[in-house]
Image (cartoon, rainbow, N blue to C red; front, side, top):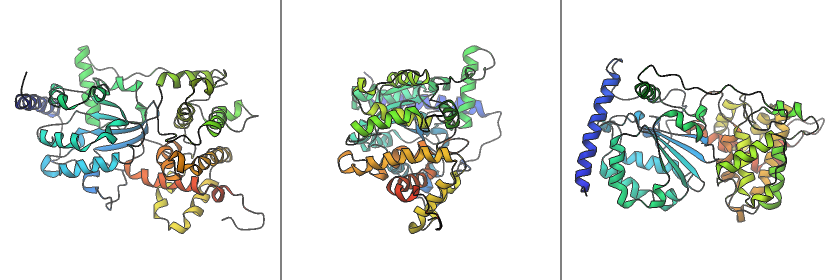
Length: 427
């Protein structure tokens, strides 16, 4: 059996091969700057405690995957040369970010392309990082997708294999082409670095010995009259004029009110994807759904999150996105009033559905001593399912204001949704 030193030498050899391929791929392109600029439009505040690392856009949180789990993306190609990045700070930043999500199920997508000799952390650093991420980080990590793996990755995995539990090893999935990610994550929401996209095209072209065909998506089918998932609130309302609240929401929330208010970690757990797909199909076909038969309150909780996430436009609509991001700049004593103004600017139907949802979430928060789901915890889980930008995904810098806004909605729902008394000024 090869020693750890031998494996490390093999890893270095393989990484140098990757370097050569990388240089060959980029030889026809304009010379890249020595360091990558911060991603544009991120709106990252320079007061961020890890601004020096976060500005590179190495790490992104983009909402939930197809199984209702928080999705965290790490892009190697965004890492600057090692002399421009303190890897200890990078490790602290990783923990700082993950600490917000490790109490719930989460998924990591790792884009390996772009890791080179010039920007890679040392094997010693990797060992230190693995040791730093204790049980609380590993327990709720449900899947790790390594995209575009090379021999370097496989050798590094062998180096760490003696320290990695069999259970953790089962969470790793190698993804050779971006198209394979579609069945696991909301591909359209992924912010994939251009270098990674071009690399994937070259890999597919080489595989087929011809020009790479574009990633094809099947043409959309016209929605059924009974459709609940993937259609607008307006569509659902037009097809069900007698029901102001979508059926999937009334049924899932009704079940959770009766059976789930005191369940610890409600909305933080995922369930088998096939169960979710089966229930979605039943709803879309207009067939009856019984949550009772599953005997698991996390099923309706995930269904509710999935419904919100699959709306073509978020429940809060796209219009107030920037206003919500500005909420942290509002004086604390005025934030409830500001949230009320934003909510009152929504279309009437969206406001009605939002009130129905938030009133229920407030009921959940009242039982937080038992279920551990305070307004803050609920906001962390559900905020990104209520609001996202018209293009791309929610940036890390946008998470805090979205969560603050959602927390205010939940904690102060009576004040936010209180109808103004005739003849008096609106709060």
